[in-house]
Image (cartoon, rainbow, N blue to C red; front, side, top):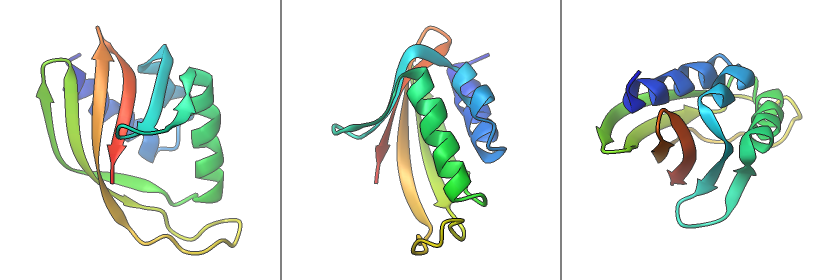
Length: 116
């Protein structure tokens, strides 16, 4: 599977809210972070628990791929994200777009950075 196909599979798992499938595409030490900033989910287990909490809070959460391309061992995706109503009653989050940079080590994703 190409890195681009893997990143697309990650989004499909994300949209299905299947955290186990999502992290199966990641290295053990993978993380999700703000671009050039703070790590928001550390390691495979931190990503699993962080996404599980986010999906519990926003059960209608989805990411639509607007554009995607592979450049070497990187995949760049422009994504449109909708959260929907929060299950915990917190304030509504307006839909937003991000550019996500997926870094790969071999066939597995080692880091996802979000530019927003």
